[in-house]
Amino acid sequence: MMNILITRPYSSGIKLRDKISEQIKNINSIIFPAIDIIEKNLPHIDLSQTDIMIFISPAAVEYSARHIKNIKKSISLFSIGKDTAEKIEKLKLGFDKIIYPTEKFNSEGLLNLKELKEINIKNKNIVIFKGQGGNPTLSEALKARGANVIEAVVYERRLPKPDSLPDLKNIDLILCTSSESMNNLIKLLGETVKEKQLLVSSERLVSQAKMLGFKYPPLLAQNAGDEALINVIITSISFSEEHP
Image (tube, rainbow, N blue to C red; front, side):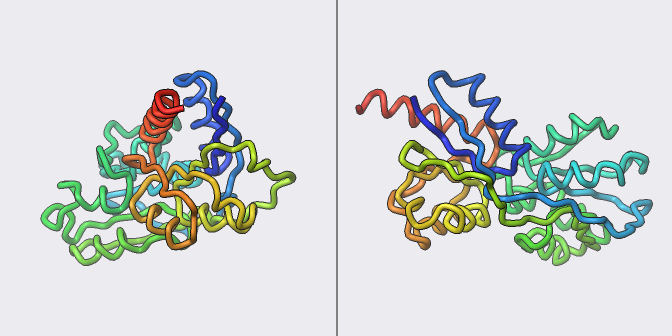
């Protein structure tokens, strides 16, 4: 049996664990959040003149939902990926269409969408719902394309204080989909964690793992979506069975 450590925030970690158990037999998924998500009070933002809203994560959807339920539905809605789009649909916010990348579930993927090219967003009012800090690439690029951009910070990330730590001797694979969670893993579990195999969701995280001194080159998923991660796990199990 393969033992996998899921380091996503708790709610999204549970969702991924359930999907894994549905699709893969003989696998034990252990939830160990490397990031805690804390809601922040959203300052008043006048959404009446907003043309486009972008959601950076499922948490961004969850903590902004009550602020956007009664706004005009002519606003164009974008999410960073499929999982975030599913969160919007689950909360029944009333929008008919959610636009998101089909391959890269990140800022680069969003910026490659034709709907966010300069010709389509110049002088448009865009609100990005996001966590505190994070990569400024999206906001800066949209401003450079002539859009008026407001960042609505609805949550912050913190280092968790777990009641117990996993026994790394029994962990075969660690799922890590953000740079902060990778750094936090080392803070929480020590240098020994660098001896474990990682599964990451971007080339940037592959480079970070190398820089931090992880022993093995990480397995790389096409994106940070649940299905992309699960596909790599399935491939990894198949390879192990064929090359014991």
